[in-house]
Image (cartoon, rainbow, N blue to C red):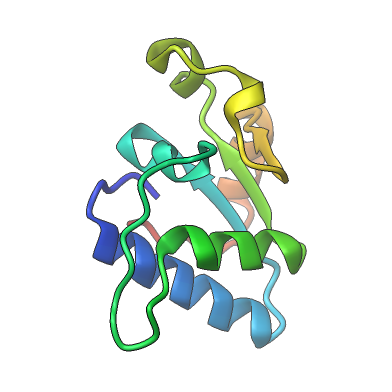
Length: 111
């Protein structure tokens, strides 16, 4: 997820949640402005009809066992540290991400 558009972020979390509920192994990589979602205290925008924010759904995904990672350039280029990350978020390791990207069983959705 790279978009800074909150509604698109929400929909990406809705679809990830539904995929998880249907048995998929869900892994989410954040980069760019979307990386703000994994920072403690980041601005939340809620949407009708359920009053949910991308962060609310993201936290539910993490609690449900989804792997959530942040791209390595984000922290050093925003003045943030690992201590600023919400619980359950790791820093992506490019070799591991690349391995998953080229796996023929991987399905990639980009937002």
